[in-house]
Image 1: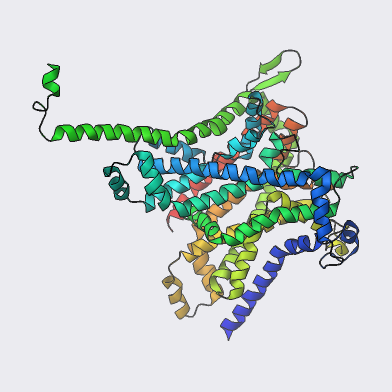
Image 2: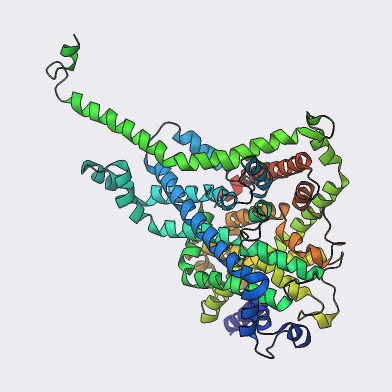
Length: 281
Length: 308
């Protein structure tokens, strides 16, 4: 009896917390179906006129369709930085775990020492260096710094160290495979679960990135979604002429998170995998 | 002479060739190792060490109209430490961290203990629901809450609360970060709970301990190292507080000032006032505090966490 009472209480608490976590999503979903007058006049947590299709048309027509450019940019930055960072981290993580070379321990100690350097402190000096190299306001200013992922290297080193036996690599070497061949055809397939986790995290980090592109880019044709939506929001609040209306911004926010939520639901296993590896060590 | 040395007959019969290939394969392995880490090493230098060194260098200079860049030693740092606007920001993020961290970690711990104890369909749904906000970009999460806080189109407009007045805005920002990060920390703590040996609290259950007692007296102390890490990462995040106040700034520029947090101040010094040297000093100081602070924190709690 007392156990049952406890279980009911636990579910009530979980229910209240679930409402808290999901309320903003519900609001966004409902708000994206209303036109601008509906947003201000109707009850904010329930549907009135269903205008989602019109809102989507407005969204993709606003400022000559710049939203689609932002969406493409976000996807491009996420794929290029995500794949690039994963490949580079895989090579380095494997080498740190399995290859003996002079300076290995010193370089790995340096990595561990620098893993705690806060990223926000590096944005300004990176901007100044990039501007000396004339690379500010190009896609490289956003992509190149995102390729560095010390935590990914660390995770993959731990994974390779714990899950790939030396004998497996040695056997391939005896068969006459070169080091790159051994890496590609023996180690890489065995690293797949950890690679997916690192890829997922670096792609999402890039999709969500704000500070770096905010500082680096001034051409709105290069903006990712985060920087673009913030620019629309600023103009709308300040009441600038020709600014996107709130219903357009709300619909834009909804469209921006749909791919993330889809990826999140489909790849849950890997999300949790990454967090768990991170927390155990 | 040379012929004698290299002739197979002169060399020790079996050891010779294998030693040679052994040495050659060592060299080959070393070369491969360096080739493999090279891209990472280049990036580490170009986008971590170099910017750090550069920030430190320019933070030691002052830009003057007449003489250009002048070496000024630690003048920028002195100015930063004496600057009341920097202090105001530092005090604000400290207060924010002191309140927001325990609240958020508390919510995360509560949620983790709940999903660990209850194994129903709903608890699995709840685990997803709590984690989804983490998958949303901070910019968009903040925009969503910005709308929810609005007195003209938000669902709370009937309550008559101004969520972005100078008295309430810090709590409103704290709510956004709690909403966004509690689920992430819940998963981290839940993973730690799942790693505990079940026998330890099965026996307590037989002795008549209730679920709540087990959660508070047995499970929570046993995951203290995960709690310590989660707390550390949260404090590091709050010291660097930037995106949320920057996004909500236009809602009430009088409350969310240009120097609201040290990072917002450094950003405005650089990009609104072109004070790159001073901005670099603030960034470097903040980065150093976070960096040294996190290592001290890890070191101080090492013994406690090692006990687990």
